[in-house]
Length: 185
Image (cartoon, rainbow, N blue to C red; front, side, top):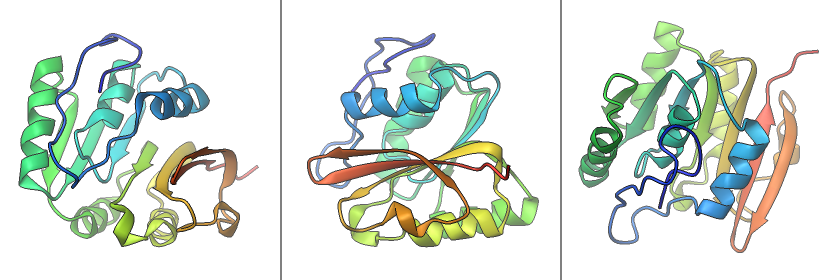
């Protein structure tokens, strides 16, 4: 797993051993970032299910100014910390070792907003609809912001989302990625 573009281009990231996390493959990640960017000037990013931190770190490498990574697993947190340190991005990333529910509630209470939100929960949770609804109901996504959803094929229908514009949908074997934009025009 590597950083594809930007100031950290070609840097190899640490990943978590085992089957608890399934990082987005480079080909998929490149397609996603070419669709939503490919570069960002000062954007603020939320990676709600951090895994290795690769999605948020890719956005930081491409010009995002701040990232917030949420991860419940202590093993994954160790890997994310190593990746942040490897890229010397300690000042750009806030890392929360917590459940996504607790962090979402805190963000809503604090009225925190984001330009890019990555939703890549464990497949078994099947919660993409819930997460998008919560994010929109609590105004966590800035106008013009994007949500990138990675899920197992069949667990989510992008057509069910009526308050966002579907920009792109990618199929990769057993998984899909849908990219939405908040556009009230």
